[in-house]
Image 1 (tube, rainbow, N blue to C red):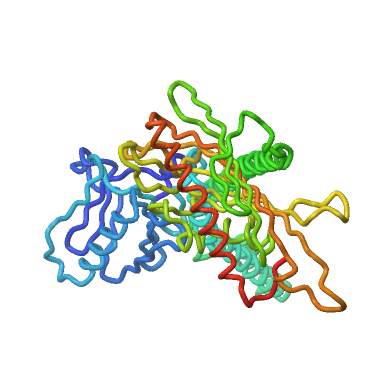
Image 2 (cartoon, rainbow, N blue to C red; image 1 turned 180 degrees about the horizontal axis):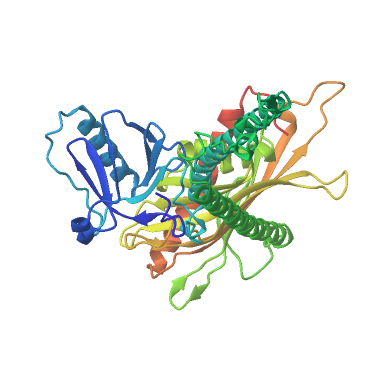
Length: 476
């Protein structure tokens, strides 16, 4: 059934009745007869390993490749077919409808293929394209086996023909003329041209349509090359997208290292809103079109922990819920690298404002020291991005963030030859946050919440890090 190989996966009307699976070009063409059918009594149904929508049905050498519109429909088909396999043949007709047609169907009999380059849409994901490549591989293997059998039969036929020719020649050499009683010569009629060149027809060749197999093989290989090209194109686009995100990370890190570490204590534009021991919180009041965009900066010093440890626990999503109290839920949307991920999270609603959600890239890295006297510095940078897997929704207002946690480790040399302990280390923390709430919210409420929550967050989080690292080896 290779007539559809030019068009790839094709919608077909499929009927499951009396333990027989039949398919038609469309429901309207049922009166013209089916285009193919198989008995399910000895059929083997195999869900595809990678393509969640595809399953294959094989009966002896005949294989049908079918693809449903989604995994749920595939499972419905598999369950229905398995049920009909066990029935006695009096089951009622069942139809799993798909907008007037049935599952996307491609059938393959004796190695014929019905899949082509046009079945690969540019919008399909890399996973789907790789699944299609797996389909091509299965079809191609069957075609290679069929063509190999054809060539083996041809070689066998030629070998038998040569043996027959040799035998004829040997017999002919012994076929001398005989003399009759009247003196005439008589030649044996078996030395005719037909005997010297008999017409040998190999039995196995007539059952294979070599031209059809060759055309289908050509189409399948063309499909593989086209799909591979699309896969490479997708991977290049993904790589470019990842590189742009990582370049953005580099830009944001450099900006924070340049501006965020500057002292704002003497800047009149920054207000000291909280001072508790080593912790100081500054705020600069900024409004744009009635939306509060107050940048915030906090400094703190914590004993007994390193900058690497503080940044590790701030970045690690596995422990996020241990110290974060403002988040309702979150999940990782994409892993860009070992030290860079994209996170979507929703925050608990603060009445009377609407609930907020955030989609951001979070990266952690060590900042190279310019001299041996520079303190060891680590940074976690969180900034808003866009991603197809987390579009805007009506339930939440999308906030925009640009946040950095910069941690420097200061070490006081221990006395004598003692090893460095946690008593000898101090972490200087600089925390900066630029948040755009994405919509109107009462300025007084936002500022009151920020003034209360940021100091609480810093104290809670740094205490958590001290507790988690106590008694453990120092992570520099």
